[in-house]
Length: 603
Image (tube, rainbow, N blue to C red; front, top):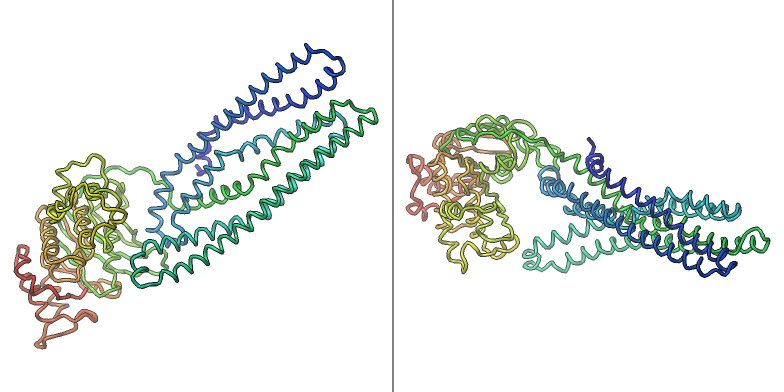
């Protein structure tokens, strides 16, 4: 079923109801011209007050019914707009979140939400009533012909002119409405980028230049919006002027017919009102044409977007992974790229093990980690947990078994407890505290004035980089996930923080989980038993830590030897690694902290 059919099908009864209501409203709209006709032709000629009173009472009752139906129609349209939003808002939210993981995001990432708002706003407004009223134009024109042939001809000519004006409005407005939306997306994206990097902009003093760039983008948006507004406003004004001219024209034709004794005086007023009613839907359509075009283009973009990210069928629940992580011949194509940046990666890790991924910058370490947690999908190959590939899992269910700490730790506006619990509803305090203790962050959190209930602000702006990393580590360890992937977990940490990371990795191993660590410092590699070396997007070496270090990190008699692609590794730096490699249990980081603090094991 197409997206349009899926959205419209549940609304069929509501749309039929609106069509019926519109039919009754349009029939009741004849009350005014017929009342005028009867007053001029019957009451004035007969002088009958009872007839006038009867007509007034009847007309008043019909007007009240018409008003009630108009209110009912507006309320139904409002709820149709809400239904449309409820039907698609979840998928639009999912698409906005997932799209950056599938392709490079151009312009404003929130544009799909704005498209949804524009479609809902149009459906909830007066615009759709014009389309329901348009089919009744022939009725009014037919009544005009019943009054007199030339009155009907005048009304028909007016209707044709306004329809042609509507077609012209569509042709002239479409280009500029599209340009307005495109320019708005560009300026919003630029402003959002500047906001995200406010510290950098302020610190290095190029806020003025960024403001200048935004002003250029804003001026381009205003220019496009001005042209779209000029077209819409000009055509709207022209349609109103034409409508008044046509009503005056029909009055003149009616007066001529009265002079020629081919029509009565009541026909003059009745035909003018009738023509105004006949042309009202066209006039309303022209007035709402800009919003209609924005809604139509927004719906087109939404359909295209949601077709790229279909709502997949439900998958069967799988048992919790307990044994191994297996990677089969991965080739990874980052979002928006055409050429794989990582190829030929494959390995197997058993429970209770920890894998360290090293290699120079740009070798693909973080790329591999994103695929291991399912954030990116591989171009070829599979990542499997206990034999089941990640795409066989329900994403929410899979997330319970995965902990992930990315390089750039992003926290959400909320309390520390909510962030650690991944915003799980009614999360047990015991589980939150256990995760914080596993990350060595419990004492750190208690130092805040209100502890776990401290709100951290958008992006964790109220925390230091090290505090964000420690809380992010606690979030990754929440509910003891089977697979924990840490991308440079000690990048912003002091000695105490590094010791906490080492303990956390050891904890994952001791409870039978699997830890994967992208590391630059030897301290984080002290507790791993497997090492993967990446070079130029390929797997250079994989195996037990001692064997890989002996193969890749060769230490001659010279004090310094650059062995890992441009990153010097000293004998002093390698000594702690070699010593640790002989120990079956995790090292006591406090004993080697001074030795390893400045060492860099080469990526």
